[in-house]
Image 1: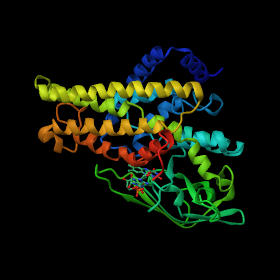
Image 2: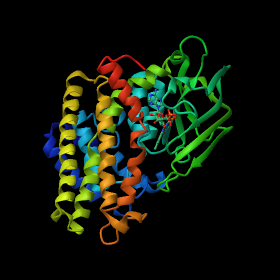
Image 3: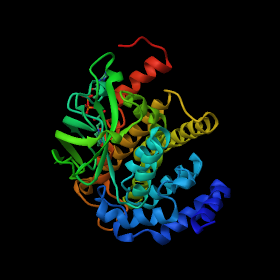
Image 4: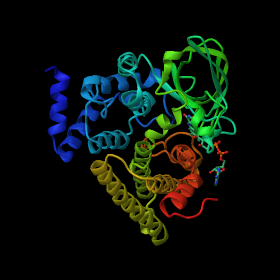
Length: 389
Ligand SMILES: Cc1cc2nc3c(=O)[nH]c(=O)nc-3n(C[C@H](O)[C@H](O)[C@H](O)COP(=O)(O)OP(=O)(O)OC[C@H]3O[C@@H](n4cnc5c(N)ncnc54)[C@H](O)[C@@H]3O)c2cc1C
């Protein structure tokens, strides 16, 4: 048994509490402090030392099976790893290859695709972006038009994607492309892997309100990729993409963003002696109670996920509650910060408090991963059984 397999056996046999302690002290010992609490998501070159440290420890892909280089950890321990990184202020690594592509290949890929792509995610050779959204096809994703037409052994792709996070930093994209115009619009879509250095592919960054440049437009002008880059069956890309939604929404529903922001709010209120003011105290207490409610709600979903292996459409409630709570906490953080609210960097005497950074990061949380309005439509129609609008 190699060292990593032995460590992963140990990780699996620990109680959740003991595992949390191991993770916490390992992060404190191994995290490169120069990139702690970054104001934006960092480019891969800057976050790579941390990415590789996680990979060497076997914790980059904690949910993948051990035979593919993962840690084979249950979801509770995967989430402990995510929570402890967030609590420490660790930079978010480029995780789309791990969190999205990996599970897709494990479930729908060929053995050849798994053997080729998965090790390259772990070694940092391939970093991935997601090419789903298009101008006019965000909430109504199934209407997407970027087309892949078969020509011999290749797909020829033409069209445009938008809001491609890390599009300029990644070297591969997994995307949804129209491969048929017959029948229902969901039934003519395929899931295809595209190298970002393909001839005819152009990436244009879109600056965002926080000063970040990770969002991009991606243009396809007769981009050619081998037919073997399709994952799953022809015209079944919608099924491939949807299979992971439940897990993604549990991940997006993690209390970590809100608890991290509430911790900053608490530090800021102490600095400014605002806990002596009953009005601020009441506002803070409400948010604290809402966070405790969210943690309880979240634990009930984890419990269901562990017992049933999936969760139903009601997981949308988790996404709505987490993203909106995160925004309310950061609204208050900004409001109590006075002139420090205008700084586009952490406050001078405490690098752990960054009011504008938190406020800006929270703004798109109600849009990505499916907007709050769309999540409410799902709850109305599929949980409450109300008529569709
Ligand atoms: C920070 C960020 C990162 C992203 N990263 C990626 C990525 O990596 N890859 C990718 O493919 N996409 C990405 N997206 C795109 C994201 O998935 C879409 O923005 C989202 O699905 C909404 O689509 P849209 O922007 O086209 O808005 P629209 O669908 O045009 O919606 C506009 C508004 O109308 C509302 N609306 C739309 N339809 C309805 C309806 N039927 N009922 C009620 N209200 C409705 C929406 O809620 C929203 O408020 C990202 C977005 C953001 C903000």
